[in-house]
Image (cartoon, rainbow over all chains, first blue to last red; front, side, top):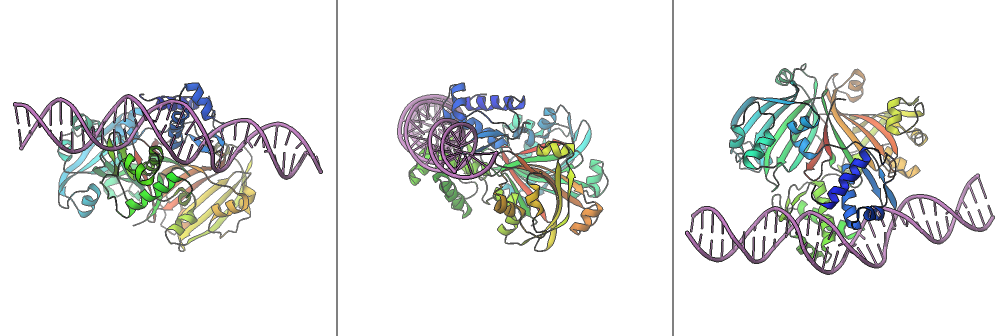
Length: 246
Length: 246
DNA sequence: GGGGCCAACTTGTTCAGACAAGTTCTCCGC
DNA sequence: GCGGAGAACTTGTCTGAACAAGTTGGCCCC
């Protein structure tokens, strides 16, 4: 908690969480908050902008801000890392590598990872579970420059993200996710312990470093009875987009 | 295009779109942009903050901003309204009401729409298509205070959103979406023209007005071979969250 | 009681300046 | 040629001020 506006945002979040400000009620005016925390209005605006982006409060010119929701959404760290997400819920993340091999990059791999076609990239198939029960099948392709660090990882390591950070200082900073539904194939069904052709939630994502360099792309399939995703949107911020096939 | 920072944001978006700034390259410094557009640095910061929220550029202290992606994501208006989305793609939105009736609000309805339990709410089942081909099944529950305006709508109207705005001035301002996958039931399969138990992408959402008042909640099922969703995230903004079943 | 108008309030936009903190690049010495 | 130190650059934080634009609530009149 370094900066003042982050402190204030956090304090407001907690106040909403413990229903000091209830859903539907109005937040104090900027000038009042500025006086209360002894900061300028600009700093207060930075704080409430964060809550607005999270979908906790709504804001429109002329009217006081409204509390829209109370439950705080998880952090990006929790979304990037399966293990961190599990830990935040008080569950244990388990995982094993089912297959791992180098293959020359296809045109698709090359385009997504910004590499020349034919560069050897590392394919990894992981099964991940919560408290031992498999819920996610991860087919990940790593760029050549990070692959050596991934290759040496213990097949049962709970957190690849954490290990990569510890060994190479790599941070996953940006992600693009495409979500749809698919039927479980024979292999999927076996590894996840569901019946063939049961519906799976598929998330295809590309992750990049802070410098904007793509690190990996992945085809993740979730047991839809165990996991769902949640997104909030507003006229001001629209992270979610609908797309047609191909 | 009213405000200066919106103009600048739009100009930058277009420049990225026509690859004047290519993916992976660096944006000019704030001070340079400020000079170029003859505005203060604060105004430039507002403009680039918008692009950052959209996932188009990445930003970190000390380094110049990096272009992360070029394709512009659709607006919130397009996400809220099926018809607007279709129009933006140059496709024709079709739709028909398959069933419509009032029912007393269940505890779940009451909680989601912030109404007293037992209040009569309007259930509507709509089939929507692109160029005549059905792609979406919409089971929507409308709050009692907006239901009369919905009831009178032509069953084949392409855009409910537009009609509600025209007749009542209502704007859908905020939305919370929970996404998972389900198998098509017999009714779903028939209405969408797919085989039973094929995977569907389910989006359950609650929409509220600008005042933060819930208007409707809906269970939308998309043919997963026709539609997918896309979300971008970063350490700074995380609209997407993973959830476990109940 | 209802409708309309206005004043007070509140958020949005923009400016200019100062300092903090992190990154990048150059130059120097080895 | 390589690495390290440091300067120059760049984004992040924060202040204080002024005006624009939209909302809300109260008051008055019919």
